[in-house]
Length: 245
Image (cartoon, rainbow, N blue to C red; front, side):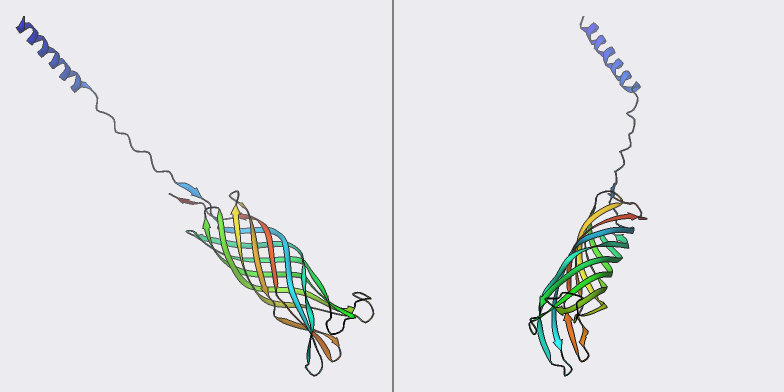
């Protein structure tokens, strides 16, 4: 009986070894490739529209034929603005560089009674402006924070008049000019589709001093810069697809 059991165990062990040898080797499976997520890219041309609010702190001085100066007071010339912009951006890593041209209609106006001649008033008005700037920014995928700077051109109008009679009445004097200056600003923009973005922007425009004649031997000197905040929307095209791990 013992010999029979030992023989049976030996046969079972041999059969198990043969079966294991006949099993196919486990097939090699290649690891799935690492996926790359597409990142928002700010490169390309864009065009858009903007609108907002601006104000200019205007101070006026009366200058006579002998160069004597008398302060006439200050006022805030404030109001709305709307316009458009066009530009180009290119991206290198998270850094974004760009150039932009912007043109806006404006109605920044204000008035003050003259401190030298209380029967008269002075009014200033910004009618339009253009900004030509370079940009440098830092992006977090579809969010872009940037600063900008460049040149500005501003159309302005000035009126001195008898307060009781109003602008354009007998005895009133008007002047207008186109002023060139500089601008600096900053903005924050978000891309909500691959081609569309919205943002908010602040700009300060440096205008210096200008003057206009109010009499054959006298002039009104005007000084004051502009501050404005605008909301904007842009449509972009022409940028390559960027991918990152």
